[in-house]
Amino acid sequence: LLPRVRARADGGLALEGEGFRAELSADRREARLEGPIDPFPVTAVVRVLLAEALLLRGGLLVHGCAVAHQGKAALFTGDSGAGKSTLGKWASQGGLTRLADELVAVLPDGDGFRVHGTPWNVGTNASARLTHIGVLAHTPGAQLRPVPASTVLRVLLSNVLEPGDTNEVRAMLFQIASKILSVVPTYELGFARNLEVANVLRDALSR
Amino acid sequence: MSDRIYRHAVGVETSVLSGEKILLDPQGRMLRGLNPTGARVWELVDGKRSETQIAQVLAEEAGIDAARALADVRAFLSALLEKKLIL
Image (tube, rainbow over all chains, first blue to last red; front, top):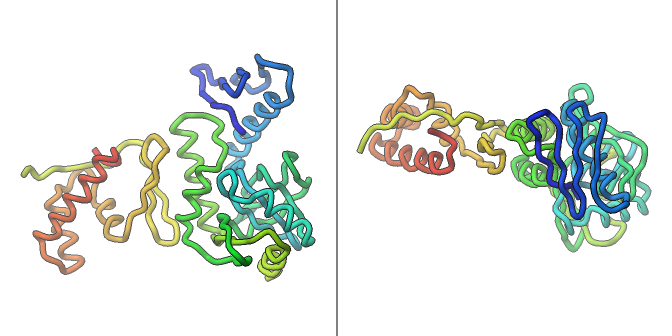
């Protein structure tokens, strides 16, 4: 989803994706793209800019699915094929708000964090307080079980969009991810392709 | 065998999650979780204490044999050195 992002010596960013290249100015006010006329390169640039803007505010842009109910949200991340879109679909059919099922924006909010929908794939222009975060698993029935934060950290970090290739950026992502996981309870959500998962999440978010 | 003194590599990030110490290597690519004993050794690696001194502290704190503590500390520090988490 993201092109390779390289920090330039002048503070700008060089992006290289499938069939396109882009250069972002140091002040991020200008982007020059080379490649076919296609929305994807523009979207890729916007994603990088959003990921960077969130990072500078102590937040993250996460490959994941976030659903909300009664002002509380659960965010689940996982590699491609983990079931993010499937979860979003069933949760939505079960009456939960699908904030995002591809990229989720996470920002600090008081002592905790808040997740925000994004426009990619299926998303909602809304936000909710993050009360559950975790990883996805395929199981015969829906179940939400606590897992160690370190288990989630590994998956989360591999699914965070990195707006740069520097050690400094990765250190910031690590510290922010650690902070999120130190204040938000961590889970594994197992589910099959049915509405049961919506009931499990509704119960969890209603408590 | 020489009694080496180590220090944390520059750029190693640390955090504590659910009581577990987590290290991120300087390149930001590899995570390593430490058990409580490993976390204590990490604390004791300060560029001043030698392997033997670290082992002595552990042996006293845990009430274990000093020779065994030294062997374990050396093995652990060797693994951290291999991962470039200490120098």
